[in-house]
Length: 279
Ligand code: PDD
Image (cartoon, rainbow, N blue to C red; front, side, top):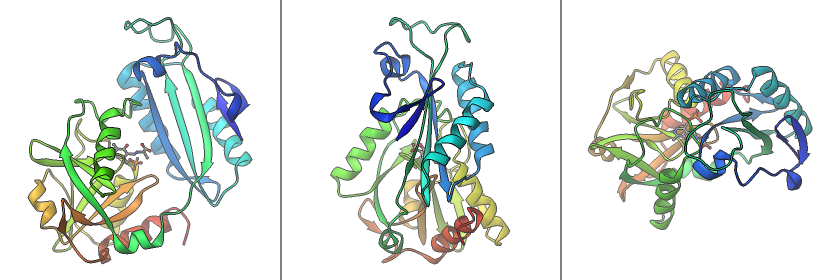
């Protein structure tokens, strides 16, 4: 399998970056993950726009849309699959270790892209729903930037798995923010609730698409902060994310919120799949 690295398509096993890459040393970089459904990138324009916002957020320059789109198309072409993930990572480049970032444009960024097949989420998991735990949101205050600095997310996910759960939900000042790699919704009396877009969440593309299709289908969607207690008392809850799609939650910190996945989550998953051209 070929990956794209700095202008070249190279065999995965041959692709290497320097020990002085600022992504490796400082997590000085940003990324995107795009779902490829039957060869078509889902919501490419929004992912590209968010990548630009993330790059601007850390003062990173030197990547053209043309480069990204050409590489994207070749990688998709070379890796045909029903469903795949396109990963894009851009770091500030390679420079002898110093905290001081080079001036914008002074050194070329490192651009890595690959496409790999993914399995659709198991129907059983969608039917049963997943268990989650809540953890303190100890991430920095610029979560809106999709940085590769994901250590708090990695540790929180590990904690969830240790507790026999699938995901961890971050809680900041008593209010639910999001999951380690997905956004979160709850449903009460037929109304959808999710945390508002602030600097404390990653503005998920799937979150936005789900809000749009839900409103079109007649649901009210409230984007306001809510406390953990509201999650415990929800009729339903679910995650949204590029590879997570719409994933029902049925247990939060050991509290049951339904024996099986709820009808609203399942409805929204089918609307998302429609949007992606799957049904
Ligand atoms: N994660 N919140 C966080 C912290 C995320 O990392 C992600 C995505 C989301 C959902 O965003 P979107 O709907 O645009 O995928 C929310 C990607 C998929 C990842 O890290 O693999």
